[in-house]
Length: 206
Image (cartoon, rainbow, N blue to C red; front, top):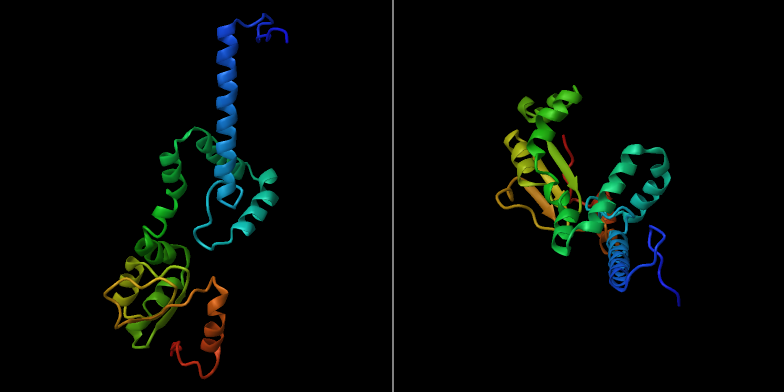
């Protein structure tokens, strides 16, 4: 075969051609690694759905909104760049960065922030002070955080938590925990049983 022509229109030397080949191979490896990283998230954006485990729904939303959302487009570009340049360790840190910070400000969000944007929130939050028995129901793939438990129980709330993971310690006398997974079909019958009039597991607020 003839010599490889460079960008300047001149034939490449043997050294230049070897270097160009290494660069092509490197770019192919990076492209393949990037593709695998983005696909592994199952959402199409490189970041997993840690909140609801609804990866396919996230992917559908991305497909529908990407063309009309400049902000989403910038997010996707940033994640794609990160998937290209980060080492394996740093990519793992990056991909879990948001999940590690979920619920970090539960006390502030469920307290001052909600009260600021919703006028009925503060009266609702302070319901126990009126002498009424107030019971909250939490259903999730994770239990309520220590910050949220502290906020509600200090205000006089009792609670029921339904999640597959155990509760934080120290609230057993105030929050009743049921180890059921709302995201798994195996616990469907138990959920149906709880909803029956004679289920008896979830106290109703008075």
